[in-house]
Structure formats: C-alpha cells, structure tokens
Length: 321
Ligand code: ADP
Ligand code: TRP
Image (cartoon, rainbow, N blue to C red):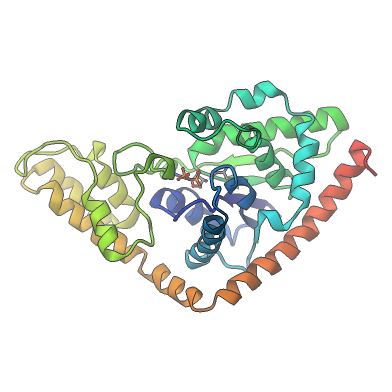
C-alpha cells in the first residue's frame, strides 16, 4: 500500500496556506493509502526558543490537526521527537550529504536573510526532513510548493545512500497540488508565518474579520471594473465558497459597481462558515486535553514499529550491526 507522509511544524497557528496546501490534501488522502502525519517538533526548535511557547505550539498544532479532520483511526499521527530513531538516522544521512546540496537551499538563505541565526540546525534542517521521510519508507509526500526543493534534497540523500550501500531506500515522490500550491496572503505574496501576512483558520470572529478587511487591494473606485484574475480576495474566495458564488463575484468584479470592502465581507463570511464544523470539533477537543496526549502516544508507538524495521535495515547496511 502507498505510504503517504507529511510533517507540519508546530511553530504557530494554522493559516489558510497550511490548511489548503498541506492539511486538506492529507485529510483527503486518509482513505487512499497508509497515512503518516508528523508534528515536527524537533524542526520547530530551529525557530522557537521559548520552551513554554514550544509546548503550547505543539499542543495547539495537535488539536488543530485533529479538528481539521486528521483521524487517528486511519492515520498514524505522532510527534517527531517521540521516535528517537529519527535523530540517529539524521546523523547517518548527514554522512552522505554533500555540503553543496544544503548550501543551495533557498529556505535556509531566506531564513538567515530574515534574521534567524545561521546555526547548524537551520542549515541541516533538510537532512532531518529527509530522515522523517526515509525512516518510514514513505512513497508520496504532500506539501506546498515551497517544500519542493527540500524534497529534492531528500531524494538526493536517498540516492547517495543507495549509491554508497546498495538499495536501502526507495525514492519519495512530492505531491504538490497546482490549485492550492500557493495560497496568497494579505499582501498578495505567499501566505506564510514568516511574512506576517497570514489568515489563521481558528482566529476569533473579530480578529478574523479584521484580518480579511486588511487584505491589500489596488485603488480602484467602487464603480470601476476590477480584474478577478489578479485579486487576492477572489483567489481566497475560490478556496472557501461554492463555485456559483465564485462565478458571481468574478462577474461583479468585471462589471464594476461593487467595492472591495463588500467583497471582503463576503470572503470573511465564507471563511467563517467553511471552518465552522472544524471550530466545533476543536472546542470538543479542547475540553479533553488528555485524549489528545493519548492519541499522540498511541501514534508514536505505531510509528516506532515501522521505524524499528527500517532502522534495523539501515544499521545493518552501514555496519552498525
Ligand atoms: P509557514 O510558511 O507559514 O511557516 P510551514 O512552513 O510551517 O508554513 O508550512 C507547513 C505546510 O503548509 C507545508 O507543507 C507548506 O508547504 C504548506 N504551506 C505553507 N504556506 C503555504 C501557502 N501559502 N500555500 C500553500 N501551501 C503552504
Ligand atoms: N519542512 C516542512 C515545512 O517547513 C516540514 C516537514 C518536516 C516535512 N519534515 C517533513 C514535510 C517531512 C513533509 C515531510 O513545512
């Protein structure tokens, strides 16, 4: 059976980009293979220094994922740090990873340019990500487009291992959806925590409305015709509204006579409604935190079983056993 795996960093609240780029595809894939969904808390150490904040982020990412439909009955859902073998594999992989491969990574360069300390953890981040994937013999990796290069690195590392030691690993395939690969943020750039342009899916009503009303638009007047193809409002509306409502909004954009403020109000209402069932599920989960811990513990035990098998193979080929 195809093994589908992705990782999500517990480094802040889930936003529309995370949901449509990574979370929803994972939820949909739960019936189409054996699904592994990992909260990559070790990766989060590259950007979160405050231990209480990290604990809080881990908890909220777990609750939010379950609220969005990650189903522990069908998916192995666990915390990366709960399967210690990932650190061991990370080290083994490091020894076949050329420096040049990591030096080319845009994500590292971007993060350093934005002020994150240029330390070894940040630099070696893609090796740990390769370990996440290879430790579970994953076939297919659903991610947003920003992770394409990291997946190429994971494949290159698998190839290096195979060249050095024979066929140890299969090569993971990225699964990047064109329609949701790049969800725009408030300023029209890629929505990302690091750009401060996010719309959080579980924001309170007032905060959410404020965010949506803050979407950057051009200076067209109410009566002017507007271009739906270049609008962040329409791009986001397409994700959350029924197709007939989207067609209506597009037509009204072209015709003129409706202002951006009105379109934003409609977008807010559609987002609020889209996430209503998930908000309700989240409220339930928040009432029973013990249940979430239990789910993660059980997920780690199941993940460990798979990892143990792979590690036995890896230790044997490299000569550690
Ligand atoms: P951020 O960029 O906000 O820090 P992460 O790097 O934690 O988000 O991304 C978690 C997952 O969500 C990844 O699979 C990533 O590709 C996806 N993702 C993040 N932002 C977007 C976006 N704007 N459009 C599509 N997918 C996204
Ligand atoms: N690097 C990914 C991100 O920033 C998160 C991640 C870690 C991941 N390990 C992974 C994604 C394994 C897919 C598979 O979003």
